[in-house]
Length: 226
Image 1 (spheres, rainbow, N blue to C red):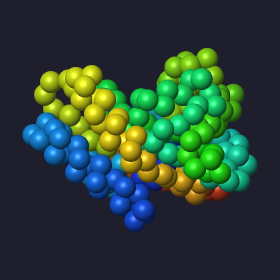
Image 2 (cartoon, rainbow, N blue to C red):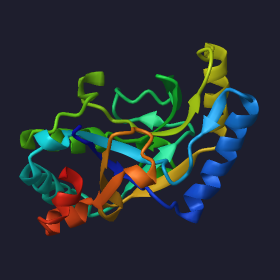
Image 3 (spheres, rainbow, N blue to C red):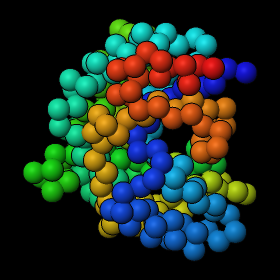
Image 4 (cartoon, one colour):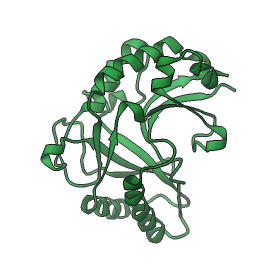
């Protein structure tokens, strides 16, 4: 079976700042949905950027072209805000949908923000980045979520068992996040290509190679493709 390949950020050990934000959120969800919510191990929590495809169908030169394109684009890191109240520069950004459940995965949504506005102005940088590499053959799965592309940055923080959450449950979690925004900077050095068969990305069965290494060393692709 061919591995799936994805481009993610911050897979692995977390910074103390991000860990300090993730821990109380996990406690809130575990306490609020006792017996139904299973938190994801923080090592496996990551920001999803772009699905690349199956390893035996992905052109490694295309990934290297993507890497060179994005290296030039990441002169400054993306400042991602999860939660809070934002004004969207892109009408495709629905700032109220900070939390969703999809196929029982609990997703926390965020967006690039302009730091000078103290996190109240959201931008469409991610949509633009995803569109910029379509010419290399990478079509983001959710590119058509708005006419402008997909501006969302999201992370799977845990898994919900049992009955689907009610609208009032979602509103409660979104209210929690609105009052407790947290931030994650994504620089070029934080981007990782992961190869996996299990989408929970267990470290013992996931191959992770930095995008910078894929760009600099053709042999780095071997670990992902075999």
